[in-house]
Length: 503
Ligand code: AHR
Image 1: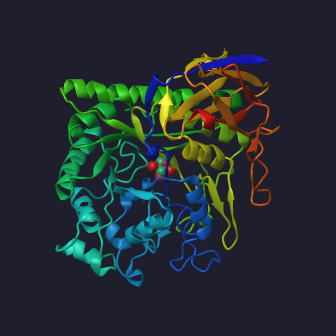
Image 2: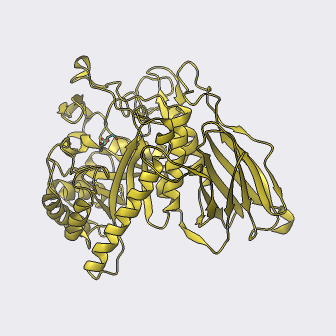
Image 3: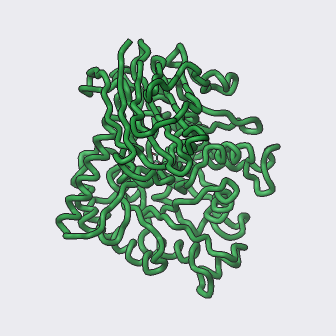
């Protein structure tokens, strides 16, 4: 059996986990909103039409923040269409997804839903067809207490208290040719700077995210980041990153290594941010908002779905393999806890999502639900800078891919250590030893495993519990070493706690 080793120390830390890295994303897209979170008349719907079964799952995931309303949808959206009496709201063509937006759910309804789901909203402003004026108006509508036209308009719509939204995205993927109102880096940088300026005049307490590239494969990647930051460095707080992977013709072994690309992407963007910091002799650091990431198998909008709503598109059914890759991506985000302060699993319900719903029926969990759940619930505290020794392999795209992908999080108050670990080996188990030299008298709380004999095994409406986590009972601590055998192709969560008498 191959062997890997981890050594951890209390003093060697990467950074504090910002809980917002367990954020997610709901776009007015597919059946995410209509038929996902909102289904009036459904037996589980509350008086506002929000499905309580879906809310319960989101609460279980402890999602701290949800990005809204897009995504590509954002770049053609008029926020004014989605406020005020529902009966008077216009139906509009949504050019991003070739659907029709009824505007039944808009800003206020979404914020109400977020309150029910115990989550915050990361609001995005349209920088495709709109700009600074619409952005500052929406912010005034949402966050200003009252006594102005727009804040009183909100109050007249039944929302007396300001929503106090703290994080705002300045547009979405503005470098992409698919984007409504795509811009060059110069064009976007200038307008983002002016928009940021007026938004912070309206509410200086907000934080702003500027658009980075829509992926590291974009031809303008790196140059885009540098130019945008040249314009916006002092006005914004975060730069965004987006990435999606899929199991393609290069094969599963290569797919399993994709988080190395994500890691490299993060390193590059941190370097660009710090290069502009140096160039500007600034004292401020820009952090990263990885506000779209996931595994995604895009589906087509067929003729019969054109201008229909809601469109059942991109309802990916995820396999164990996909879940393990999502696990590797979560570990990668955690390993950059010093700079990645926000991240959003894209998306949350039905469209490329961990939570799936049946119209008029139940809800169920895609495989990716589990690594996301475990990381969000247990991955809070400080990320330790573990020394990792692992055997490696090469793939078509990557060299020296460690079989063991892992990260360790230490919760000082609870005196709990969590080892998140993936065995990338699709054929064999992996023996992992963790040296706890700095943490005497810890014991195993539990070792949770997500695995299957079939890498392609998935959950479905008819078989929703095909791939579910179970507990591995054989993991032990001997002479200060955690000894665990990781099943082939598995996601593992090894939780350790301090023995009570030693506290
Ligand atoms: O998350 C799905 C889509 O992917 C988003 O709308 C867009 O921003 C990205 O291209």
